[in-house]
Each structure stands twice: as structure tokens, then as C-alpha cells.
Image (cartoon, rainbow, N blue to C red):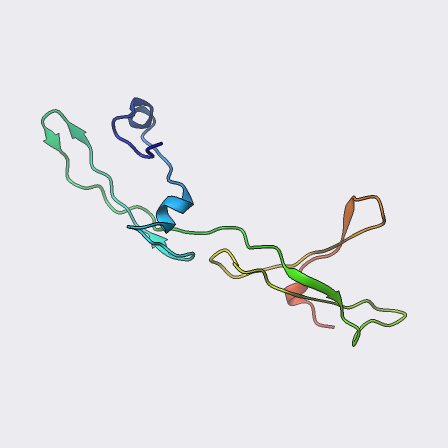
Length: 124
């Protein structure tokens, strides 16, 4: 499938199109997470091509982060009154800073209930 193909009348009529992130990350673009995408558009009719539009707003290549890995009990913290957890970030943080972690638990029903959030700003 060709994305943003001006020969596709639905794209021309809608005056919008989308590109899959994988396309932008592949050659020849080779954009990385966090890179800005600044674009222009030209219009073409049977007489020729317009001048380029003003630059777009500089979209940024972003994804959601990978799930944290290696969740474990923090035995140095866990007591009869407090449970501590440790984990590592997944491979990709999605191109932008992680702003929150949320801890959820399951009482054996496979339905997870959030215990806490805003973990980055908590101090114990």
C-alpha cells in the first residue's frame, strides 16, 4: 500500500494522509525516536506545481514505552509493614521521558487493581 499517494482521490479530497512509523524509521528516512518531522506540501494541477506551503508544526516520532522488565521484591525494603519493588525499564522508552510508573496487583482473579501511581515523584 502506498501512503500519501496524490493519485488516491480520497487523500486529495480529505487533504490529509498518514505514514506508518515503520516507514519513517526505514531507509531512506531513518528517523529515530524523538526526531522532529518538519514537512511542507505542494499542490499540483494540470498546469503545474504550486510553491511549497509553510513548514508544518514539527511532529515528533514517538511511541509508548516498552513494558518494564524484571519486576522483583526489593528485599532490602520489604518488611512486615512495607513492600518494596524493583524493576528495569524496557528496551525502548518511546522517544520521550517516562513520567510515571503504576503498580497494580492481582488478588488471584486476573483482574489487576492499581495500588499506586506517580512513582517517579515519590520519596520513601
